[in-house]
Image (cartoon, rainbow, N blue to C red; front, top):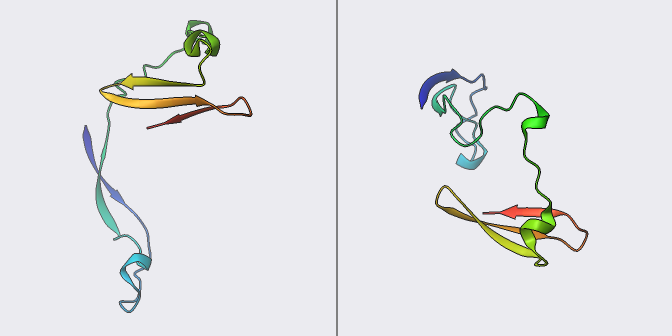
Length: 86
């Protein structure tokens, strides 16, 4: 991880505003990844592997996917679209 100091230009809110309506401070520290561990850059579209959804779902409407120790749920909607939830 790379730690960067980022300046954000915001006007200072009046102190009489509720906390949830106040803006962020003018300067804050942000951690940004210096590399993408799970998403290597692919130069050519021919290098991207394509899998048919029917091969993954095998007749089911919902599957569970484990990625980096976290389980995600992928569903096929009634309209035939895919939804991925954590």
